[in-house]
Structure formats: C-alpha cells, structure tokens
Image 1 (tube, rainbow, N blue to C red):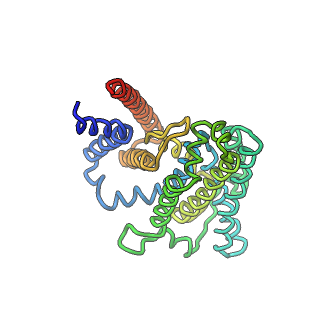
Image 2: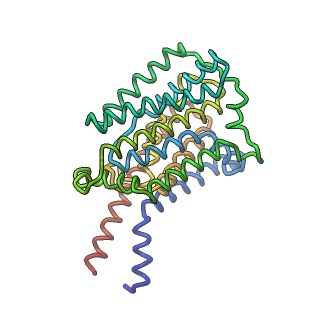
Image 3: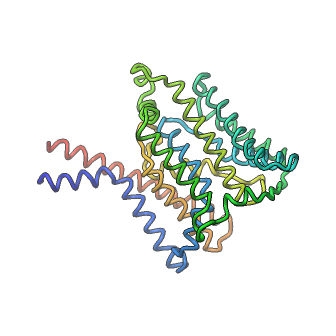
Length: 331
C-alpha cells in the first residue's frame, strides 16, 4: 500500500465512529423525508434546535462526565427541581432575576454536594446521581403538587423569542457558548487533559501528580452549572414549570454522547462525536413525533432504533480496531 493510500485509510479508520453515526443520521433523514417532505424545511430544522436546546447544553457536561469514566443520572431531575424553584420564587416575589439566580444557584449547590460525595467521599457516581434523580424529582412533585407553575415573565420569554429571523435567539446563543466553552476546556486546557487522564486510568493520573479529586469535583460542578442553564432554557420555552419537564433528559444525554462514539468507560472522546450523537438523537425524536404515533409506539420504536444504532456503532468500532492491527502488522 502506498503512503498516500495508507494515509487515506488511516483517516477513515480514525473517524469511522463519526462516519458511522453520520451515515445512520442520513438514513433517518431519507426515511423521514419520505414520510414528511417538509422534514428538512427551515421551520422544522429551527424547531429541532429550539426543542432540543436544553438537551444539547446538558450533553456538554455529560461529555466531560463520561470521558472521565463516570456517570451523571441527575440532570433531568435537577432541571425540573430548579425550574419549580424558579417558579416558586417568581410567584412569591415577582422578581424573575431572583428566580433565575435561584435556578442556577440551586443547580450548582446540589451538583457541588454530589461532586463532594463522589470526589472526596469516594462514593460511586451512579449511586449518588441516581439517588439525586429520585429525591430531586420527588421534591419537585411535592413543590408543584403535580400541577404547573406559570412563569409569565417577559424577561424569561425573551430567551426563547427570536430577535433576527426565525432562528437566532438567546437560546441559540447559549447553546453555541456552552458548546464552545466545553470544546475549549476539553481541548485547550489542563482541565480537559486531566479529565481524559482520569478516565483512562485514575490511579496513573494521580501518580502523575493530577489532583484527581479536585478535577472530578470540577467536572460535576460544571455539569451542574450547565444543567441550571438548561433549566432556564426549557422554562423559557414552556412558560411554566411542570412536573414532567426534563423527564428522561439524563438518559438522552448519555445516549447522545455514547452513540456518537465516546467511550462509556472513559479516557477517550470529543465534542465532534457528541455533536454527531446529538444530531442522530434530535433527528430521531423529531422524526418520530411527526409520524402521529401513540406514545407507546414512539417509545418502543425509539428504543429499538437506538439499540440497533448502538450495535452498528459497536460493530464499526470492532472493524476499526481490526484494521488498525492489520496496518500495524504491515508496518
């Protein structure tokens, strides 16, 4: 094999997981266009981004958590709890700014508590965040009484309302800023390098001088900050705090991160893979919603399609590893 040909093959192998999920996304697009010719219309694409803005923001934090070899199952419940707290504060004071500060503050407070238990208490992240997922949603249900809390604030509404055309609004800006900040932290700072090192081998990273406890604390605290922002974004879109807001958000975020090609075991990953995973998940959710199916059918199809996509992604990864071994043997 010539050097040039080998270079092309190596590039394809390197990005095979990204190419695989992009190909699967293209298959989804072709199917949904056949069912709905307006699937790729500007209005529907705008709707896809706006409806999934909170998921995209949460996935930024989830990317760091997964790359570090951990898991965060609390984001969905934190979204509903902080949204309800915002509604309660606004209803009591009439001050939306105080409500928004409460939203971010509560998300940060709970996340730092979880982070401290995980990093310094050495308790498994799944156990801590799973318990948080349960009690936070229970507390939110207690606060709302299973009823919605209207938040009729023009300031909050402006986050979702477009100010240029039908696409650009504060929500879109927040999505871009969160993604950009996450990419910079992961690829241009010690924090990102240490995150990958912890995911690859925490003991080795610690022996190399990395303050693994502080880095893990920072990872979950950062994820909590993004969850608070996502809560405000969802609240501005819905206009009220409802008990079902953020339901399933944590699992959708994890699936988006993993299905894009990031290793669930940690140590390896990128935001390009997360974006590709988000593209697949957002297209799938929106496309199924346009088919006028019953909720039970939507959940069934979504779960089956995700399972098939994960299996295909796993298969492509095995092929990639085999090709790499073949190339190394030829060298």
